[in-house]
Length: 305
Image (cartoon, rainbow, N blue to C red; front, side, top):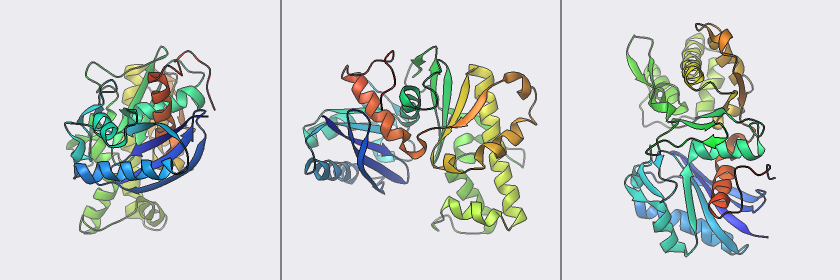
């Protein structure tokens, strides 16, 4: 049995685990992401790899990253909040540190791969994953193929424009991400942006404060606008919502409430679901990408578990 170290790098925390070749998670943990310094960022990953190597013989490293990721070379032109990786190649850098093969893929593409091979999209040829976290990402499958785009920027839904309540325009990354929700909440409450607030606190306070409830409702509306736009452009069989917020039981209900107020949504006929793997999708998809690059897993194969 082969074992792999898998990373899902986020703008706030980095999840990691030891997975076997069948995609079973042996153990996992996370740590705070160092977004600004390259060497500490790499050394944190190398430390994790060394820890897992004391447990098992590790065959490779699979990484899920935000931003414009060249999945062939490993070069990252832009890595969202992780500015230390802008213009860097984490594949070659980490291979030098660990002497192990490293493969890298965009985080939303990893989520889409996880859902395609063994999740809620395993019977779909055309579907979309929209991931909501520090930013808003997207993975696209069209006619059974992952769409990466001409310069590995396909599915960057977070760059789409949406309107704010004061009539201005901003991106989905700024307004429909959980980071955007937290930033907006701090502005309205007069809280310094440096203050640490968990998004879960906002959801809880909205139950008792009508003003916060209204703000949260506007956030759901912006997500719904993003869902509507990608559905009309790409005509998928279904749209899957991923990221930490996808674990909320009322998420789809609140998004669908706004979708039904948008022009012609009833004629679009797209099924909306949460991702099967929720927060594990990035790690699972990173492993599938690694196995595909090694020739152990082909897009036409049956799902693996």
